[in-house]
Amino acid sequence: MAFNVGDVEPRYRVYCNRSLNMKAIKAVGFDMDYTLALYKPEAFETLAYAETLKKLVQLGYPEEILGWTFDWNYMVRGLLIDKHRGNVLKMDRHRYVKLAFHGFKQLSRDERNRLYHSDAILSYEEPDFALIDTLFTLADAYLFSQLVELKAARPGSIAKSEAEVYKDVRAAIDLCHRDGSIKLRVAEDPGRYIHRDPHFVECLQRLKDSGRKLFIATNSLWDYTQVVMNFLFGNETGVLNDDWTSMFDLIITGASKPSFFISQNALYAVDTATGMLRNVDLGFGSHKVFQGGNFRQLHQFLGIENGTQVLYVGDHIYGDILRSKKDLGWRTMLVISELEGEIDNLRRNADEHRRYEELLHVKDALDDEIQRLATLLQQAKEKGAKSADAQALAKQLDRVTTQRANTREALRKNLREYHSKFHPVWGEIMKSGHQNSRFAAQVENYACLYTSKFTNLRFYSPNKSYRSTRDYMPHDEVAT
Image (cartoon, rainbow, N blue to C red):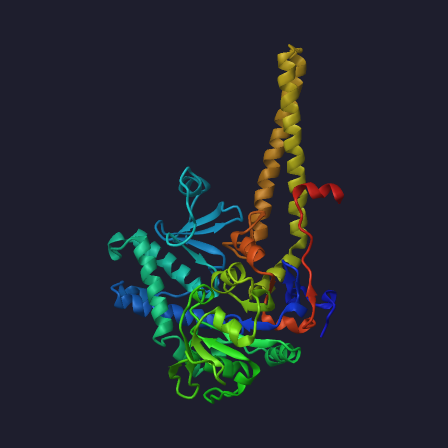
């Protein structure tokens, strides 16, 4: 246990975008999937992919796709699917498309500019685009790209538009989650698909002992929630009991987030023995396991006076973080399991990053010198200066221009190599080129805190006051 942040390994730290004093927090809530339960994507997402292929064949797609395989490392969180053009994009925080692939073929810069940086105004939002903002959607993007490849290679094999293909992929994956194709397999052997964190119970207990009320708000239904939470609390596979529920003051299943935060969904009490539901119009009674409902009932049940008294921990920018933050004022913590690898790569490649910064400064200085020389040359011509002077300036300008071109090429090469150390295709998740990525901007805008897993809270006091770093603007450099 280390309450001094300097004593915590960077990969386990909780990072703060917006100052948060935990003393003001009366209730801490959790999503379950990819938040409390961290899945093993090489097993879980591969299972989802395989079951989705079967559903697509039933929808009329070629049987040959049943022989396809899933590269679970290929896609990363934060990408964007252009449903109509069949492209997968990576954008920076200014919504500039830095990378684009049609299937698995990279589009050239000219192609990107023609499609995404012309006079057309694109929303980059639903319904025309789909956000890859949770690990659950990595299989969507990969399978969609495979089908786009097949359609391009053999147009007669898929007689549907790219948008219709995406709709089918999304519907097939949703059906796999609803009909038990995935969750029944997980229930048979949770350890194959879910990590068991040795600090899981300890971390929850410390929060509970600090006087906070704890709750779960998950889109999973009770039968699956029971299986997963039993496993995380260390119970034997196949032995289900309700002992773990004593850790929580309220458990909301089938929450239908994000509508939970903005609608008036009906609330039902769950019979934990049978899974049967009953209406709770007459009050909560002594019950604490429910399905559906909305944030107002949660506030009433927990005695929450306003949203700033709630800290909600989740993995999904739109499903967990954005609406709870914007509409309710809840304080938020985003779980980004990939963050550990990102931080390890940042530390491992720090020298290359410094080299890039040095080249960038050189390039900027050369830009300034080119502008200075070009101005002098123009002035010399206007004043009728001797041709020898103008020729000398022109030669000097040519030399510096060549030097800048070489530096720019070295910069591009350095940046490509640097990003490839994070991911061979998409690079660093939090960066696009040298700008913050669109995903990083969303994290910054909507997550008060972010970390690689919720159990990293064990390194901090339950009453810690998290402080954000000072915001900087370009002119602030005069003070450094």
